[in-house]
Image (cartoon, rainbow, N blue to C red):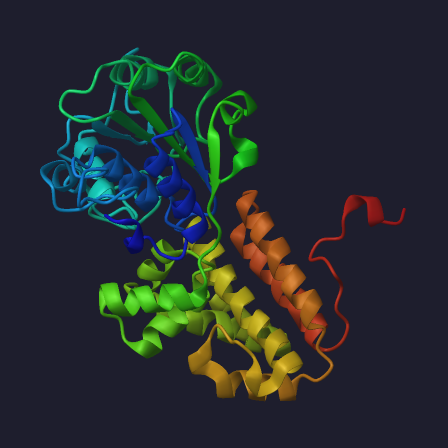
Length: 398
């Protein structure tokens, strides 16, 4: 995968290309940034460039992979013996052993060959379903000590380097981190470690300090839209909506265009806002019941759609026809809604939805959150908004 195939991350890929061209390759790099922004795809492209036998030869690429030589094709198919991918997984046994699930190898193959897909254990509990895991997914001590660490102390079998890609580096248990630290402090020759994380602040500081950091930013909606059309064959109308609803994540955008439930959830989100304006229990309770049945992750996704609708109301009020709406196919409905609620405190509405997402993340009862949010939005749409869904304790008068 040449660097040109990476979506909208020129700053990150330019830095890696310079390192390859100068042969000043760090022994450990940490890719960090929001989910779905191309970190894993870039890690695979970096691994391919490291192993490319034509790189640096006359007529070959300087700091890139050719994509056609035997090592490049092996990396692309996850068949290269010197490129390893490590995923965290839920505990499957209490016995002191490496207890990787039976589908682990298949997931590694899928993640490696389609790095923008959602094949990890956090995203999908089972490969034949799309429900997220409800178990704790993390890197534990025994798999790191028994598999990862021995692999990363070997000499290359046939490539230029041994390349280890460890995803979810912000989900490493402390006792497992000690083994990784030893590798970072005493790196083996011709071994390159690539750690991938979403949040830098949750990676152990001693690990961060020993890696060269590469930041990934949310993807621009226009870049996601182009990629959906050219790579996935998505129509212009569907790609535009998905790209603006994906919050900078190409992976999320792909899930949105392929989701049969997206239309239903969007309709449920809009209906919720409308019924909240009316404030009638008869109209709200069927929606609350449906939201309660979505599960925690589903409810968070639904709240994200509610937030995107309110965001569009804010933009439509401020910019009129020039507003860069997320729900571009609902432009006329958004205009009418803004005209119908001239006194609405849209900033308070957005803040309340953000509070609701936080409450759901913290395991608050879904029905209670939805009902509280509905009446909070009702007040805000009638000009009686408050900045928070739940008043902070330090603001409660006694």
